[in-house]
Image 1: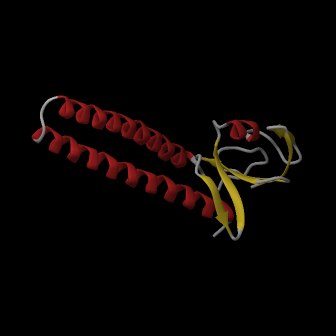
Image 2 (image 1 turned 60 degrees about the vertical axis):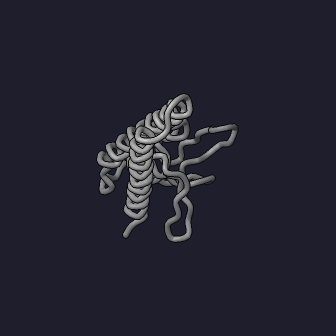
Image 3 (image 1 turned 45 degrees about the vertical axis):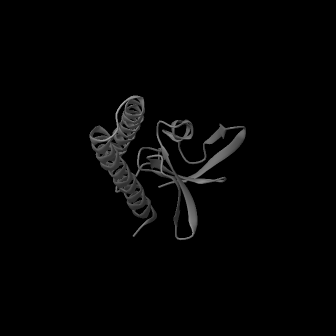
Length: 149
């Protein structure tokens, strides 16, 4: 298995784990909302329902974000090679290594760290379309792109 494939699988696992967590939260909140309806009365009842409703909205927004991440992952063709950084590229710099995909944070493959970043994130936007030997400056730190895979 190559590095790009391993990173892609880790990103898929990250998104799927987040999806499971959000599903559990939504199910738990739905159950709590139903039991809240059956029990108490008055102001306490209304406050509890309002809090659960806010939690449901928050979980719904997170779910929408995860669905968007799944759509982005579906667009990635890990077999595609290019000299320019694009969605699905592994970009090696003199400071850090990046996988242009979804924002999944730090991933490790074969003992090396990679940062899975969205192409719409500030660093992702800077890397997108760049080529080997390009210099970029991010947060007052200068990077040199050494390799794009």
